[in-house]
Length: 342
Image 1 (cartoon, rainbow, N blue to C red):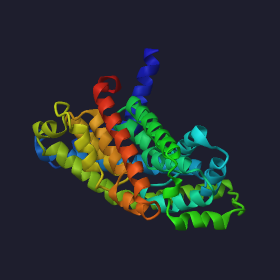
Image 2: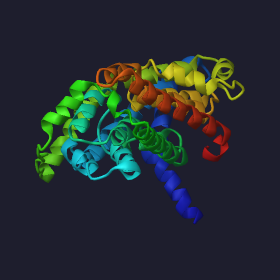
Image 3: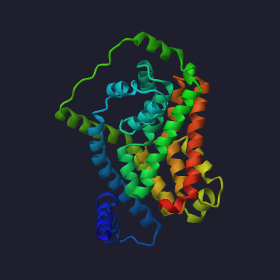
Image 4: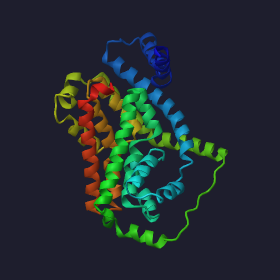
C-alpha cells in the first residue's frame, strides 16, 4: 500500500507539480546567471519562470482534453438536457453541466438569454451560471498541481454546493419576474422552436479541441502573466509579516478582505492560481485564498455589469448576495478546518 501511495505521489510530482522543472529553473538561475539563492530576486524570478512554463504546459494539455469532452455538451445539447429537469434535480444537473462547459463569467448574457429562451427555469439557469466559471476540469487539476488533491476536490464540492443552493434559493424566491422584458419576449417568440444539434465526427471534435486551446490561451495569456507576476512580487518582495497582518488567520476579517479585493478584478481561475499559490506560501489560510479565487471568478465586476443588462436590480442583488455569503462561509470553514486539507 505504501508503495502504491509513493508511486502516485511521485507521478503527481513529475506530471502535475513538475518538481523537475522547478529544479531546472533554479539551476539555470544559479549556475548560468549566478543569482544568489538567498536573494529576493532569485525567489521572484524562480517563481515567475517556473509557474509560467508549468501553467502553460498543463493548460494546453488540459484544455485539449476538457474541450474534447465539452464537444459532447454543445449549448444546444446542454439546453436539451436541462429542459428535462426541474426543481432541485434540475439545479444539480445544471451545476454539474456547468463544470464541463467552456464558459467564463463574462459569457453571462448569451448564456442567460439562450437558456431563458429555451424555457429553462430561472433556478437551473443560475446554478449553471454560478458553477460554470468556478469549476472545470482544467482548474481542478491545476489546483491539485499547486496545492493537493484534497483541496482541489474540496473546492469542486464547495463550488457545486454554492451553485445548487444559489439556484434553488433564486427559484424559491420566484425571481423570474425580475428578468428584463426583452429576454422574456425572446422566449415567447421562440416557443415551439426545435433545438437543432449538428453531429460531430471524431475529427471535428479534435479540431474543436485544438481551436479551443488556441482561443483560450489567446484569451487568458495576459491574465496568466499578470497573475504570475503579482504572485512573484508577493513571493519575492512582500514581507510575510505584512501579508499575515492583512490576510493571516489572526485577522478575523481576512476572508472578507480577500473577497472584497477579488470582486473588482477580472481573470479566469488560471490567472488567480499563481497569486493564490504565493499567498499560501506566505502563510495565508487556505480559506482566505479560496475566497479570493472564488470572488474573482464568480463575482468579477465586469461580469456583474454585463449581467445587469439582462436582469433587474433585485435579482442581481439577490444573486450577488447569495454567492458572496456562500464564499464567505466557505472561506471561514476552510480556515477553521484548514489542517484537514493541507
